[in-house]
Each structure stands twice: as C-alpha cells, then as structure tokens.
Image (spheres, rainbow, N blue to C red):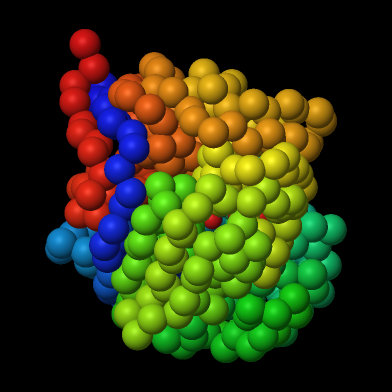
Length: 418
Ligand code: EPU
C-alpha cells in the first residue's frame, strides 16, 4: 500500500490540468452495453474506478481496449448478465449496468452493493424505476434480479433526485417500448452528459439537466463516441487548494458553469475567483473568513466537495457550519482533521468548525475518495509533515493528484507504506 507524505506551508501557484469526470465516465461506459456495436469514450481519466468498470464489462463478455485517455468497448460479445459481488462491493457505480443489461437482454443479475464507510446508500430507487418500466424484480442471495421481455415506457417519479437512479432509468428507458417521463430527475451535469452520449447512440432523450426528462424508446442503438466532460469535483479540489494555501491556482479545463456554488462560497470566504480563457482561477492572500455551507443536489453545493471545504474552514477566521444533507453520516474525515489540530464539533448532520491559526502535521488515514482529498488539502497548510495512509481511496477518483499538485509547487510525494 502507498501513502502520501506532505510537507505543508507552501503557497500553490500555477496551472493544474483537470481531467475527465469519473462520475460521467462510469455511466457512459455502462451505456456501451446497450448496443452490440463498438462504443468509444475520449478523455477518460486513468482511475482505479475506471479500471473496475473495465473489469466488470470484461466479466460480462465485452472486449475493452484502452488508449492513454480513451476506452473502446465492443459489446457484441457480451454473454453474461451477472455483475458479481466482489466487484460491485468495491464500487457502487457498478450498479449502472443494471438498466442497460435489462433493457438489451431482458435480464440482469446485479449484486446489492452493500453499505459504505459513511452509511447505508440504498438502491431502492433504481429498483422502483425498473419496476415502473415493467420489470419483475426480486432479491435472491444478495443479488438483484430483474427480468422483462421488453420494457415499457412509464412515468417514473423519484422521491429523491438520485443521480444513479436517474442514470439507470434513462439508460433502461432508451430501449423501452413507448415514452418514459422521469420526474424529479437528478440535474447534476453528469446526467445531460450521459443523455448526450446516449443520443449519439441513437436514443431520443430530451430535458436532461432539468428535473423532467422525456425518453422516447427506440428498437435498437448503435455505438457511441464522445468526450467526457471535465471533472467538476477534481477542479473544485484544486481551487480549494489554491485558496487554503493562500496562493493562486488555475484549474485548466474546468467548466465554470458547473462550479457556481463553490465559486460563490470561495468569494464569500474572501478569495478572488475568476473565469479565465482556459478554466477557472482562484487567488487568496489572507486567512479565509468562516462561511456556512449546506450540501444540496445540483446546482447546490456538492457533497463531494464537503470534506475539502471543511479543511478550508479549519484554518479560517471565525466559526462556520457544514451541514450535510445528502449523506447524513459522511464525516469520516472529521476525526482525521482533528488529528491535524482542527477544532470541529459534530452534532447530527452538522459540523461546527472553529478556525485555528495553524494545523500541525500528523499521521492520518484516508477513508474515502473525497475525505482523502480534504486531508491532502489540510496537510498542504499544516506545519510540518503529514503522512496520509490508505491512499488507494484517492486513486479511485483522482488521477495522479500528487503530480498535479506538485506542478503548482506542493511538496507531496508518494511512498510505499512500511
Ligand atoms: N438514495 C436512496 N435510494 C436510492 C438511491 C439513492 O435513498 O436508490 C439516496 C442516497 O442514500 C442519498 C441520495 O439518495 O442520500 C443521493 O444519492 P445518489 O443516488 O444521487 O448518489 P449516487 O448516484 O449513488 C453519485 C456519485 C457520488 C455523489 C452522489 C451525490 C457517482 C458514481 N457517484 O452517487 O459520488 O456523492 O452522486 O452527488 O456518480 C464520489 O465521487 O466520491 C461519490 C461518492
């Protein structure tokens, strides 16, 4: 296992390239299963989660080849509809194969993902959507089994605008007979990106990116070929890195239209945030002001940037509150930030963060992708050296983050854990 060793105290300065979005690439790779043709995605980040999806597609019988940032999927040879527990439990996004397999083959067997470090994360909305489209769904030996000769268009009304369930429903409905309407659909940018990819395969989807998506089913789909949108969470992480170290960072390739909530929050904290020709830049020359933030569905403040913003508040002037409304228990980074000297009080789904003038390096442990990002940011300003272990979590969602941060002057290195 590897760990990061970070020596804090350097102001970051420079341009950092933003890669393709993990959470757009994963459903798009699953979408390739909808067609017997060959699909291609460009700008796919090199991440462990992408590798997991490649392995899953191969287990299903697809032939996958990889270029530097490209994935080519030949789904003509798919000969299994079973996604096994060993893969699904390591990555929940594996559940995205449910809709495509069911729609194309009339049957899918996908293991229930189980819980994760910060809570139960159910899949009931995915199952309800498949049932609404006419599938018979049962749960046997920990697997979800869905069957239908041919799915029928339906009205699906989500209780919560779930990203994954919206994506799964959209993919399944593409090959259903008749028209499907998804109400209270997730509006995260990864959803219109998925819809655009599916439309490129011959699907007829309108309204993705709004809370009402209309899908007219078609008899078959061809191959897809598109570029993955930039990763708004990776971009946001770099912008917070610029602000927390009181430096200047330009996230090159970032799409400012996806980063509105973070950009306003950073401004409120005293940073200068600008849209540049190449992306978004942040600069900060003082300690941040404390701010209050509550996570929310898009276009609200993303839960995937909650740990990073908490790191910023940990060194702010004053006391700010972080309220988590998407995943009530997503606070595994709190005890680790406390080890670095952060003054955080947790009460239910809210954390009260009293800023301290300095954090101090210590040994900490990463627990999930975004918690680890928060720890790296805190380590960049902590006095002395911080060792962050179990960084396989961060390799799931950030491509070569240490190289990218080093490019802007950070003192961070990867070493083998002894
Ligand atoms: N929910 C249900 N039932 C369901 C599905 C979701 O109750 O069937 C609840 C969840 O428990 C949660 C809320 O709905 O409280 C929203 O969950 P959602 O389904 O939107 O999340 P997801 O699709 O499982 C994606 C991202 C997550 C990100 C969330 C929220 C991917 C692969 N994952 O998860 O990203 O936190 O949306 O924006 O797109 C990450 O990248 O580190 C990550 C965890």
